[in-house]
Amino acid sequence: MIMSHTALSSAFSRVEKQDFRNAMARLGAAVNIITTDGPGGRAGFTASAVCSVTDSPPTLLVCLNRSASVWPAFMQNQVLCVNTLAAEHEALSNLFGGKTPMAERFIAADWATLATGAPILNGAAVSFDCRISQTVSVGTHDILFCEAQALVCNQQGSGLIYFDRGYHPLLRQEAC
Ligand SMILES: NC(=O)C1=CN([C@@H]2O[C@H](COP(=O)(O)OP(=O)(O)OC[C@H]3O[C@@H](n4cnc5c(N)ncnc54)[C@H](O)[C@@H]3O)[C@@H](O)[C@H]2O)C=CC1
Ligand SMILES: Cc1cc2nc3c(=O)[nH]c(=O)nc-3n(C[C@H](O)[C@H](O)[C@H](O)COP(=O)(O)O)c2cc1C
Image (cartoon, rainbow, N blue to C red; front, side, top):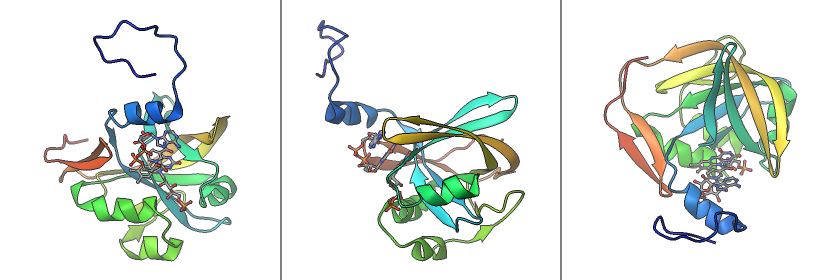
């Protein structure tokens, strides 16, 4: 059930999946490419379900659908890099968010490595090189708690927001 902000319907009505998605489309978020490498192979996917958890120890969370083709690689490697995208990365986001073969995803950009070996995107707004410290399953997704081992912070450039099922460039970015 959907209520407009003026409606007085019960707040305890069951929320349907499609209504939930339509509502979530109104919740803007940064766009990230989450990468991994190791014994499970190199893999990466686009994610908007990313946020800060605590600064002690420095921890983010990433929500990953267990049916995604990349899930086994992340589980085996236990390391990942959260690469937060800049305005010019819209095409790259679609490449990592679709059904594109893994080699084709990575060939479209330049990558480096830092502490964990997970691919770091050159030109990202910021990259968090992490090890997975804990995994919790909720519904269709795994919540990956990720402890930062190293950071790359780009002081220039713009950001990219995903809102209303579309990309919106941010023309100003605060320095880290
Ligand atoms: N958290 C996730 O797993 C997300 C997955 N997607 C994938 O990209 C496709 C296209 O997304 P949109 O164009 O934004 O249209 P959509 O109508 O499928 O999704 C609208 C919003 O609902 C949320 N959402 C979508 N699928 C979800 C899921 N399986 N679990 C939890 N939240 C979900 C996201 O906030 C998304 O922006 C989706 O169908 C989904 O496969 C997109 C955004 C987030
Ligand atoms: C803008 C955008 C945001 C997405 N956010 C997430 C997310 O937070 N978690 C997730 O599991 N999948 C998310 N997806 C979908 C994955 O990127 C996609 O399922 C992944 O690339 C795996 O696809 P594959 O199974 O074809 O490899 C998102 C897709 C797009 C386009």
